[in-house]
Length: 239
Image (cartoon, rainbow, N blue to C red; front, top):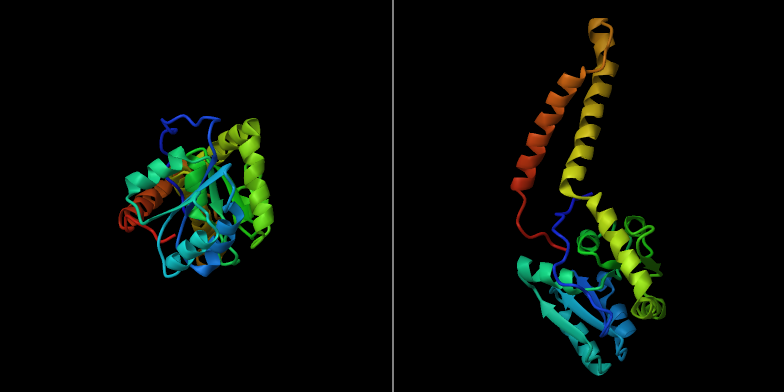
């Protein structure tokens, strides 16, 4: 999976006053479950929902919010990276209400966790594993379960604070440094396994694993290649 940038902890302290601040970041498309999300929070004064992102169905979702009288729902559209970071930092919850198994990871969920947000996600393969032990999992398309999850966090400040702390800690284990290190280990292990499988047949020689110094040099080479690949990535990824 992708790694995330681990920024300093949010400078703005979250208070126990006011509504639960829920953040959605992603495309406005049917498979993201935005309609279920809007219905779940409509008319709930203890919940404030902010949606970041754009897409072909944004107008449809804005109309739905209007029809439901959901004055606690705010559509921001596309925002700058700076504004996105600010949105993460001032939110209590990051939500991923997707309805398709194609949503295998949910990068924005980990970005929210890195800001100390409690993740609330659909019960989908991969996605539920990301938040295991630090978040709340609900059935896809279940607006009642989603609403109950939000209201539970809105009224239980101690649980919300603890889950946010655990979410941040777990996100720290998914930072780019850790991610690259794991990829390095996997690639070096693959090279050594291939060497072990091919060398005897080709040379009739005894196979030995790389010395620590040689293994470190090989990992450094992989790290440089990985860094070059990351540098070539576009600044903005589609979510």
